[in-house]
Length: 633
Image (cartoon, rainbow, N blue to C red; front, side, top):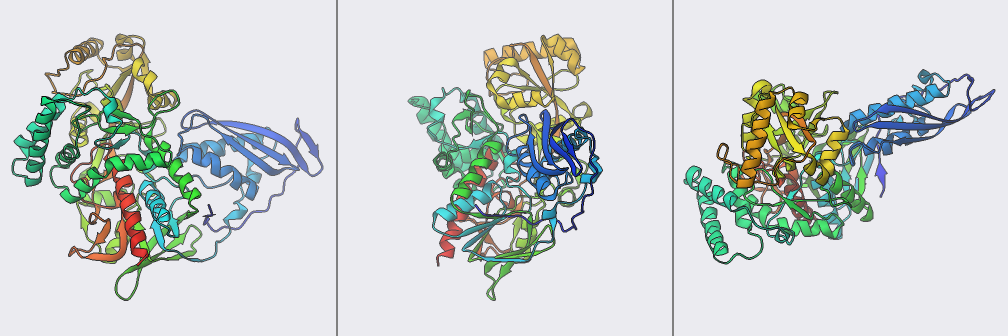
């Protein structure tokens, strides 16, 4: 796959190095040999090995086996080549992986020092950072954004026979998609049928909620009536696992407080199972089905590793999407921020224009345009503009989630919807470096509990994100502890990653865990005992939780501090079920399509965990096919 990088303009600094004594060979022209340095990364040690010949960098290798796949692995792959190209250790960090990037820089500095040389002599700018030239290219479909939605759309359009170019603002692909830790919601899949159905209470709870809280919502009432009929029939003759497209719709509508666009929700749910099959067709198998917040039944589909342990979905899917783009010959232009949608005299979208990091202009002429730029969760000024009460919150969003796609679309007449609907995720861990780390909702679905600083539970842990976040905010210091046991750790590579990164405290007994958490020991012992009894009885009288897994009774025990953080922007440009972008008057902007978090209407007032991946796969495929069909006209 051809990759085009635009770099920051700067003059290359010539290096004048004096030979130093070293255990390696030293000549009149400088030092030769291989030298190693190590620094602390996000997951563990990051090691950089630099090979010098006459004091010139000829090779760099960076390793960090515990860095997050798809995120921390990007700078490990990218930065060494730039160091060699520029004979410098002063290269740009990767915005989505700053901790790993800084560790690479520190380790490189240590390696130069190990050679007996001065790191300041290698502080010049990479020679590849010379000013890039303006670029103009033509294609059938241009996709803006190389996250999950963008790459899915691009693959679909390419498979329809179209020439596709992707333009990505960051130096790596993935966006928010690569950060997804949970899975993908899908109804009526073969993988669900491999589970024993024991979610009766969840179905009954959802139907009761529809009757009690949404009796005046025609869509929810109609869906509830259909689900009630399906549920009655299933109870009379239970076969396989109970779920349906309509129950998925009902959960999504209730989760979104009934303000979702019903047609968009229906399209999402109807195409979800096919989305799982499509992922499998490109080598991304989501075979483990579990419970997640806001879902009546087990519906979230997750990948597993070779040992059968569940792993993070984003860092699993994104590299497969990348390699599939490469297989299809799809060009990705990195480090280029699109800032204008090109239109013809009739207002039809005919391409995009943007700026590379070097300030050069990039113009892509196309027959159709797909916006997949993500939301605006990393643009805290924009967040506060629409929801002032979120000022000061941490964010889990990738650096590229700046809302530029929404701005571009509105400049050509696109309408927007639900812009003030901004979701905070209840389990965000702020580490010792001040970085916000998303802790997967799957832990709670698999049996973890939340306790406050007093050592007590305070909420149904698998409630919707807005409800759980609000409950956390009302606790002491607006935070909570998430507790798991060794049995859960053994089943989850994701939890093992949290432990390796130092996010957890631990205890061989509940009393020891309480001491590590600095909470009242007697209170925590009572909480754990009560919870385990509730699991055995499959009844939670205090908080009415209906999703139960195994009891938390296998030592040692682990706990992670969590708090709410800005996670997802439900609002965005308006689209129809063909992913066409609509004007404020609901008419279509010809040639312009959108998918993923840049759009609004799918999730309403609150997105259910697992629906973001469903959204970018389902609507990514629809947008890609629609754009390909339009380009063929």
